[in-house]
Amino acid sequence: MRPSRYGDAGQAFPIYITVVAGLLFLAFAYLAVGQAAANRNGAQTAADAAALAAAQETRDQLAGDWLEVVADPAKWEDILDGDTAVLDGCWRAHELAAQNDATAECTAAFGLPPGYNVDVVTNKTVGDSIVPGTEDKKSTASATAVIEPRCTFDLPGGGSDDGEGDGNDTLPLPQLTCGDTNWDPDPDEPTTLPHPEDLFDVHLAD
Image 1: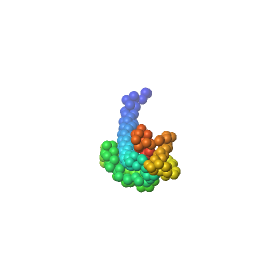
Image 2: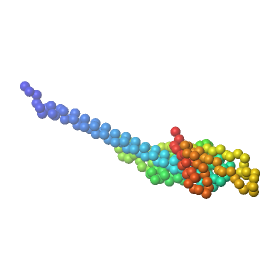
Image 3: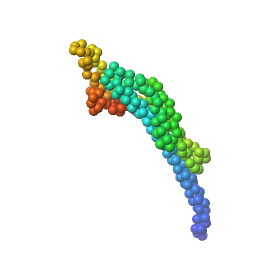
Image 4: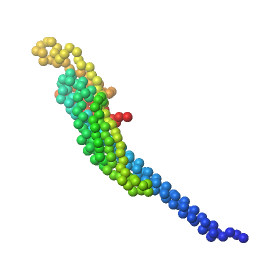
């Protein structure tokens, strides 16, 4: 006597439904995990961009300060070492965080090298999913950016007066070595003056 085909099919159908339901549950769970990961990545991107923007603002200020005293190399060291940095660039962190749909908390990191610590919270939540409690959950991230000096120089000896003539003859300005590039600054020739990114390196701290 042959077993009934229809009986086997009837027994297999509930198993099929169970397997399909399990696979759908896993698919939705992976989707929820993916949504959360994407939100976290967005938060980290916002934090990195905000910290770098604040540090770049201060870097540009330091470079401008150096240009104002470029004819007086005795004043170079404190500026190029970052000692005179005024850490008021947090407004740029807030601006960049907003552009990345997040809210930032920014604090100055005093010391050498100077920099900024930034914590962000995304404006968007993870959203509805099968994982309870995610619908209102926001992502957070932190980043620190610092301003590192890139240049060295040697002050010329003997002062600024050659001791002859009317005392108005001055020694040439010292050469700046910034990374692998040498600069011979001439206040009257803009092409000889390094840019902010030549003078200072802005990067995320480890």
